Every structure is written in C-alpha cells, then in structure tokens.
Length: 261
Ligand code: NAD
Image (tube, rainbow, N blue to C red; front, side, top):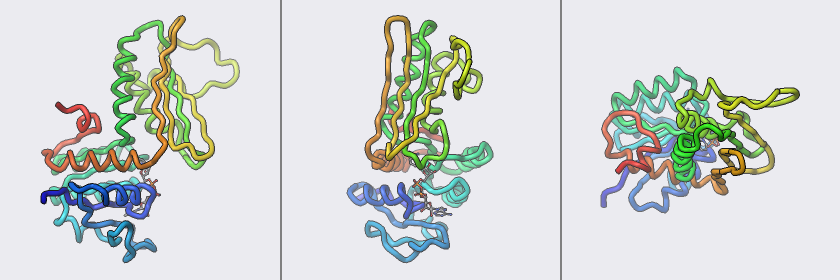
C-alpha cells in the first residue's frame, strides 16, 4: 500500500506526542522516525510505538515529509537538512524571526515548505471569512480581535490573533502594523475609525479562543473559533503533510491545502 513516510521533529513535546498519537490511527501515513534534541531523556525510548532518536540526517533519505514542532533554531536546522535532500518540510513552530522566516523561504527553492502559525482547519477557514467580512462590511464597521489562552502562554497577542488581524487589515487594503491598537488604558480618547484593536485574556487551561468583532451601528457580527483539543493542530499538520507530499518546490500555506481546487 502507498503511504506518506513522515519524520517528526520535537517528538516528545506536546505537539510531537499528539502528532505521533494521531498518525498512528491514519492508514495513509507512516512515521518512520521521531527526533528529539541530542541531550533528551527520550532518546532510545518509544512514543506511540516509534523509537526516539537524535539525528535527523540519519533518517532523511527514508522520508517523504518532515514535520517540525520544536524551537525556532531547531526548525531552521531541520528545514535545511530536509530540503537539501529534496524532502518536503512542514512546520508549526512559532516565534521565528524575520531572518529565520527568510531561511525557510530560501529552503523552499529546493523542496516544498509549509509553515503555519495555526494548523487548525477551523481557524484557517475563519481567516478567509474574516477577510471577506472585513472587505464586505466596509466603512461604518469597527474591527476588533479578541483572544483567550491558558495561563502558561508567554506571548501576546497570539500568533493566530495576528494572523486574523492581518486578514482583517487586508480586507480593507491596509497594513496591520499601520492600524493595530495593541492596548487601551486610561484616557485613550475616542476610537479611530480604521484601527484594529486587540484584546487579550490569559487564564486557566483555555486551549485557544479567537473572535473577530465587526461592530456597526445597530448590528454586530462576531466570527468565533474555539479550540477544545490540541489534537486539531496535529490533525491539521498531518493533513498538510499528506497534501504537501506531492507538491513541487515552493512556499505553501494552509489556505492552499484547504482551498486549492
Ligand atoms: P514543547 O516544548 O512541548 O515541545 C517542543 C519539543 O521540541 C520538546 O520536546 C523539545 O525537546 C524539542 N526540541 C527542541 N530542540 C530540538 C532539536 N534541536 N531537535 C529535536 N527536538 C527539539 O512545545 P509544543 O507545545 O509541542 O510546541 C512546539 C512549537 O509548536 C512551539 O513553537 C509552539 O508555539 C508551536 N505550536 C504551533 C501550533 C500550530 O498550529 N502551528 C500549535 C501548537 C503549538
């Protein structure tokens, strides 16, 4: 039977485990290696039936796609190792600098690369809807983005809130950095018509909630996504990997996976 051969980088992390667990139930996917950093206590142990090792290069020729959920440095290193061998690369690692994103773009000349800050199918559909709603609503509607996450999250607003904010700005032919209102406190004065405000909640074990408000006169549209299970990101990344396995070199997005005809 034909299946896609995967290597998972960051295998013992929260996402790595979820990927291994979900992949174990998919007939069209086979995980051929699980990679951790060379000092990991998991080396030589097995997670969901796959033995953990420390050297991606050793396994690269047996794989079709590498999926990475690790750290920014490790992501770029893995991308180079994979694409130099013509192996496609999927990554959900967040917090990459501009230089690191440029490095991924460079890698995509050799093999297909898909990097996404959020692999949820629902969030990526929401992003399309937000751009559409922002464009259609036009002047007279104020845009605000709300997000809530668990108390351990260290960055704010979330990468997904920024992703949605960018879609909202794009819908109005604006650049988010020109119109974003990151915080309001004290005598901030009335709201500017074209600003896009961000509101952040942190607490408990909230997996992730995002709402884009379009507030008009006498009506309000709220576009909401609620994540209740981290498995959505793993399943989205596995879907992306299976899709990417037959693609030519270049940079791809979840939008390509979901909306390509
Ligand atoms: P985590 O800390 O639980 O796991 C990261 C794993 O990567 C750890 O096990 C760590 O040992 C491993 N690692 C670090 N350096 C490595 C190296 N050089 N080689 C191999 N493995 C290495 O974190 P997590 O919650 O699994 O998240 C990982 C990344 O994915 C973060 O950047 C997070 O923000 C991001 N994330 C993205 C999405 C998405 O949909 N795009 C969803 C959830 C998390």
